[in-house]
Each structure stands twice: as structure tokens, then as C-alpha cells.
Length: 301
Image 1 (cartoon, rainbow, N blue to C red):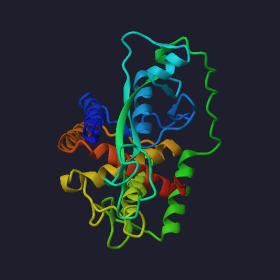
Image 2: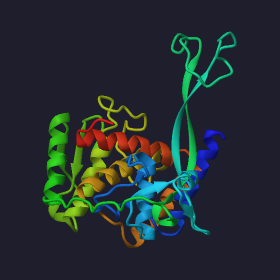
Image 3: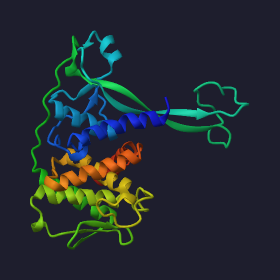
């Protein structure tokens, strides 16, 4: 299975959600304390986290665990007839061996890797998972309730932003629009009082912080060289990275900002055009968005 088949499969899921009027990275699930994870408890990251938490919210699953068909079978369970699986990504290490390499016909790493002979690369595959609530007969313990936060999510948002801006030396200025200027390494935001809610303000600020992580002194993303305006197709990839990082940070802070009305329709149509033109965009943006969120939150991957 080629990388392109995997990209197509994943992106088609996103397109279907957008056509139904949903924006998967809009974070309607942000208040949940239990993020999506494998049946063995390992938390999902990147695209897999965004998509499975969106599906759990949409379909009303309260259990955050996901399992493959074969895993369910080995554990004595049975996926119910008619249940729909979700495609998630898996990156695998692969190698190109030169003709004289003793392991040239295998998938084994050799001592020539990195010595201008044999080379290493990454393959993306997709596989299908079901929520455990779609499976009968699993002998598993119920998930404990999430730990209730004893802090004000808005106060936490302020702390995260201030810590990131101070740590990275980024200037926060006031203006009539929200945007990040790479040449000045500065974020411009309208006055707080002009936003319809605190959530809207912080969500917008998280988005601009996401752009700032692409600066050459940080993650050095190639599309992060000039200010990005909403709907600009040239910089659609960078805009989506900022959206993804915003979603990941929103999942930590509980800050959400749903887009409404005519703006929502225009927003969805903009992403549909971009994703139909580039089937790799959403997967790569989720990867980069996760790195951006980790940087803003001060976490290592």
C-alpha cells in the first residue's frame, strides 16, 4: 500500500465530515479529561488524536479507547455487525539497501545507514480501529472518570500564553486584526474587549501562537515566512497547522471557539477546496500542529 493511498483514505474522512458541516479540529470535545488512546492505554497524537476524539464526540462514545478488529478477536470480543471503523495513521521505518548490502531484500536496518550507501525513510500506512463501545464481549475494566480540573481554564490559557511568549521572546502588540509577522517575530491582536467571549480571544491567540512556532528560530516551517491571512490558498498548509495546534491546546485548556453562521460556511468551503487539491495536507498539518502545540505548552514530544 503506497503512502498516497493512506493519505487519500485519511483525507476523504475529513472531507466527508466537512461536507456534513462539521469541522473536526473545532474542538467540541475540549472539556473531556480522557483523550483518545489505544486499547493498551497509549495516547494517540497528531491526526489520530483529533479524528478519534471528534468521532467519539459526534457518536457519543464515553470510552476513549480504540481497538483493531484482530485485537478485539484475540481478546474474546466481537465487533457488532454493521459497525463502521475509523482509519488512523501509522508511520513505519523503512530502508533502501544498495545492491551489495547483505540485507538488501529485507526490512532490516543495516550498518550502512547514514553512510551514503543505504538509506532510511518513513512510510505512512493506515489501519482501521473501532471504539470499544462498538465491540461486544470484551473483558476490560471500565475507564475511571477523568480527574476534575481545579483551575479556571481561562487563567490557565493566560498562563500558557504568557509563559510561551516570554520564553521565546515574542512581542504581543495591539491592532485591528489578528496576525503573526515573522519578520518582526510579533503577534498582533485586537483589544480583548472587542471579542465576543474570552474563549474567542484565547482561541484566536492560540492560533497566532501556532503560526509563531514556524519561525526559523523554532520549527522553521517553509510556509511561515510572511503574514498569513484567512482563506489564502498559497498558505493553506500553514493556516491548517495553526488550526491544528489551536485544537491541541484547546484540548488541554478547555478553551473552545465555535465558528458560526455564514463565516462557518465559507470556512468549510475553503478547507474543502484545499484538501481536495492536496490529499497530504491534513495529515502533515496535524503532525506539525502537534509539534507546535508541544512547543507552546513547553512539552517535549
